[in-house]
Structure formats: C-alpha cells, structure tokens
Amino acid sequence: MNDTFLVGNGAGFSGDRVDAPIPVMRSLVARGLPAALFFETLGERTVALAQLERRRDPELGYEPMLERLLEPVLRDCVTHRIPILGNFGAANPAAAARLVARLALRLGLPECRIAVVGGDDVSSSIALDQLPVHEADDSIDTKSARLVAANAYIGAEPLVEALRQGADVVVAGRTSDPALAIAPLVHHFGWSFEDWEKLAVGAACGHLLECGSQVTGGVFWDPGFKDIPDPANIGFPIAEVTRDGGLVITKPEDTGGIVDLRTIKEQLLYELHDPARYITPDVVLDISGCSVEQVGKDRVAVHGLRGRPRPDTLKVTACFEGTWLGEGEVSVAGPNALARAKATAEVLQQRLRLRGLPVRARVDLIGIGSVLDSDAGTLWRSYDGPEPPELRIRLAAEGPDRDAVDQAAREVLALLCCGTAGTGGARWRLTPRILTRSYLVLRERVPTSVLVRAAREMV
Image (cartoon, rainbow, N blue to C red; front, side, top):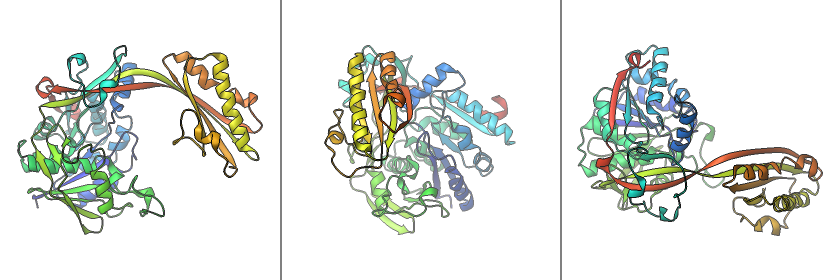
C-alpha cells in the first residue's frame, strides 16, 4: 500500500473557497493511504500586498483566510498523520505559524509540530540591480519605484527537511507551486533530488493540482458547451502517485465538477511558455511527449513525463509601489438607458479635461463595451444594437498623483445629482497599484532555514 501516495489540494489562490479542503481531507482519511494536503495561496502580487499588511501590523502579512481554511481539517489531518503544507505564510511565515499554533491549542493539539520555512524574502540581502532580469521584464522601469517585496521561488528541499523533522504543518512563504507537491513525495518515497524523471512526476502533480478546481472543472466549464455537474460544489483535486512515477488525477467522490481528458489537458498547458521546458526550482519538466488516459470516472492517468536537471538560478519576483487606480461606477436603467449612459460617459471625460486632472482614464459601459473595448471606448461609441434595459458605467483613472486619481474617481459620485435621469447606485474606491519585475539569482545566494516546534512552545 505504501507504493501509492495521495496528494490533495485545498486551495488554488488567496480567496479560494474556504470549505473546499473539507471533502478532500475526508477522502484522504477514508482511503487510508499515506497522504499530504497542500494549500497554494500566493500569486505574483500576493506577497507584496501581504508585505503592506505586515507594515501596518507586524502580526499580519499572511493568508487572511488561514484560520478558516485550516480549522475544519487540522485535527483530522494531525490525527491521521496527513501533513499540511502551504505557502500561506506569505510575507510573515512566523506570524502565520503562531496563528496555527493557537488554533492547534484550541483544538486540543498541543503537540502539533509546526515548521516555519524561511529564506525566500531577499529584499534586504540581495541587490536587485546586480541581477539579470528575467525574460521580458527588461522594459519595466523600476528606477524610481520604491521596493515593497522581493522573494525568491524556493524549491522543495527545505519543505522535505521540515517533514523529516516531523512537522504536521509546514508554513512557508514564496515557494514554487510544484514544490508543495514534490516535497511530500520525495519525503515519503525517498526519491533523490537528482532523479529528474521522478521529480518531473512530482512537478507535474503540483502543476496539475496547484490551481485547485481548475483541473476539476473550474474555469473549464462553459454552460451548453462544456457542462459540469454541481458547479456549486466542485471537488478539489487529489493525485495518486506511485513509487515508480505513476500519476492519476481524481477528486472526492461526493463532490461536483469533473476530471476528464479535457480538464487535464487544459491545466497541463496552463502557464507553460514552452511545454518541453517548464522550469521549476527542483526540475525542468518536459510534457512534450506525455499522453493522458481516462482510466475511470473522474480518473485520468498522465504518462510519459520527462525531467531535466534543475537550473542553477532561482527566480526572484520583486514588487514595487506603482501608481494609483481610481474607480467609480454608477448605473442607469429603463427607457433610453443607452443614450443616457453614452451621455454620462462623455460628461465624465469632459469633466476630467475641465479640471485638468493629470490622469490616464477610460470609461466602460459594462454590458456593451468593457473587457474587449479600448481606452477610447470604440465599442460603446459605435454600438447601435438592441436597447439594453440597464447599463453600468465605470470610470477608471490611473496616475502617480494620489489626489488627482482620487478626484477623478469621485466625479462619478457627483452624478447622483448632476447626472441624467434615473442615475443611481454610485460607488467609488482608490487602490494602490503594484509593479512587478522578475530577476534571476544563483540558488546558493538564497539560503533557507527550517524551524520546527510544538504548538505549545510557540505561544
């Protein structure tokens, strides 16, 4: 039985469904096989946003839904020796670990062993201007921008060390997504970190599971074209991995969604610039010769994965303070809504010119022209189709001057009295923008650390 190991996913990004891990955990427990559960909650800019939170409060800066995600599953995972791994530490793994410790004590788990993996934050240890820029980021100007965060994508080795030391919960910051799956597989099977073929299976496992329900029907489903059962209850994925490198993707039986050849193919190709060279910190994955096979209901096997030696460098994503984004929205409805919406859009642009506000701005008429429109409003200006019963007017303004952007967005609020008949539902907000640029650094310049302690010792 130990020749098969189960890897479950409980989150694909920060903001994912907080109840998603529960059926995954129950399925792992019910099957009785060696298993691990991982949470992937970091996007490119998530660490920067978390760093801003940490500046406001030294005890914040980790995944805000961490307690909600872990509380329903922690006791059962610890009891059944199913380790939990996550990059939910974000900008503050130590504080996240303390939260997990408090949760463990509340659940009656004082001996729950919690690992803190550090080293990914290189903002104060590496001079970015001495590093080569990654891929196409050369054109991004950050000379006058203030650094918010700089984090290296670390691999699976420190996570494996945490598991070796008996961690029940491994709290990390910016790991690579596949590392969260590679680590428990290497630890359980004893795979070498130079066995590229086995590591390729681990990387593919992590890549397929990293976005949660994307491989079980989420984003895939398109009503009437690609239907899935019970989308309100999409099951998050589980991988079955064998010692010799077999890989099957499935999901909990009592959940919605679907696992078939189409969902697997779509997720395999997700974010791959080169299918023959998907670079991770642990291995370079080659899926160019792989095949997929439906081996049962909601069960797909992946064959023919190849691995190449890992790169000498790690990717570092740096985030800088950018400009400001101001948004204002208001609705018009009823007869003549189209004419009123177009007139409102014109007035908003005139107001910005009259006030001389130094912003870049656009107006969208949501429902006619927004996602596919240009800043000039080409689609909504030329629209002559059926009269819509209602429209939402959105003004977006961007620029370095916070007050100017704020004033531009507030022009929408004035429409409650200055606008056309039937104008209502106004809202407005101001958001700081984050600018990202990626670099490459030699991996030996990013030392990692692992500290494992019982929950009772952490609070």
